[in-house]
Length: 454
View 1 (spheres, helix red, strand yellow):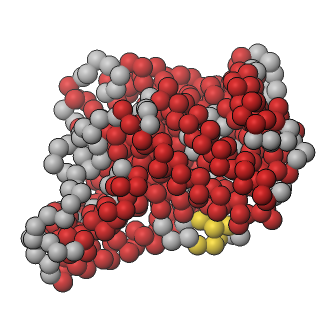
View 2 (cartoon, helix red, strand yellow; view 1 turned 180 degrees about the vertical axis):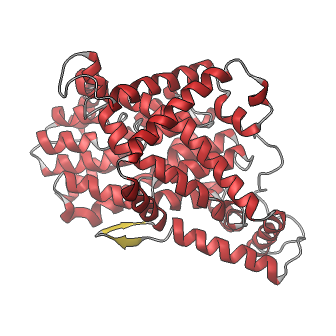
View 3 (tube, one colour; view 1 turned 135 degrees about the vertical axis):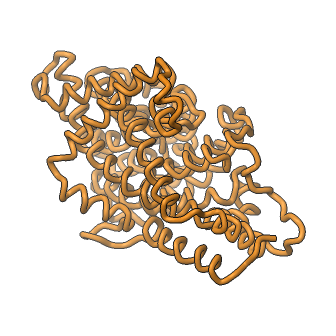
């Protein structure tokens, strides 16, 4: 049993409480509910302002060049773990990073004309590459840095071990994942889905989650933040229903979290670990009598392994570098391509047609218009509510679209792009299948309840 002394207890409680305050406690700032980490990132982002686009261009360019060099596996990269992990990737991901670099330079240089019909203009348009660079990457680049540097407060001082021991009896039978995943979920729910994905990646690569568990948590528990849910409902002009709306989102989220891990593709994932021996047991080992006692012992062991402030910043920088050079280029490439298709082709309208019979069966008004929003959410979560606000008169249908767009959860312009750009074992086909599963489950729950509300 790990020795419990005043120094270790303080080393567990103080950093963990600071981490909870920064990442998980909601605060009202500038009229919106958010978390302190997001406020810090926004303040820094606001101060840097015009520097952020060129910073994003530099990061994506270095990622592409470094990855091309990494294909040759040069000694100076392979002998340095951080360089090897960041730049030595598969040819497919090298291509994605190069495409991301090409897109970001085209967009930054303002090539093409706004609203033009040639391919260059479609890529750099304000609704495609312009949106991804100006509205997404410039936000993510700061969030990744600040959150990654501070993430060790949640990871390195025993909080996940303690929470995991307390909640395993709930999380394992209900959702088939470890108790520590509750921290990922709360961080996403209160703060931002990207923070939850970052946390899940770290735990997977550290050997605390298996392939199956990491896949389930990233695609099921990286929930949409309260803040963004408000923005979506406001877009469709139905803020007066926010209480019922968010209650419904939580209900659907729990239903999806119970059902989706039990069916393919998530049920087919293996319980293999990147690092063996780090996962927590599901049962209470001897000589511990309570989950609290076991959790404290695990927390004390984790604190005892901490090597000091150098380890804290080293782990933080590893997190930041991985997200900057691995994820930002992926978001630029995949997010831009998805938005180009959404804006300039009928592909998502065609893909939405199979939902027509289901929407009509569920008696959704303006089912044809609603069907157009079903698949487009795979590219970007905000697009369905924009389409609904512009083209759907029925309040009930706008409410359904706003609710489903949030519970679909997996969208390529942010969370989906992050998952694909990370080392999590989920590919784009599996993401799309999961997206469809969540969409159908969401409709089957939301539509009958919407009939009771309207």
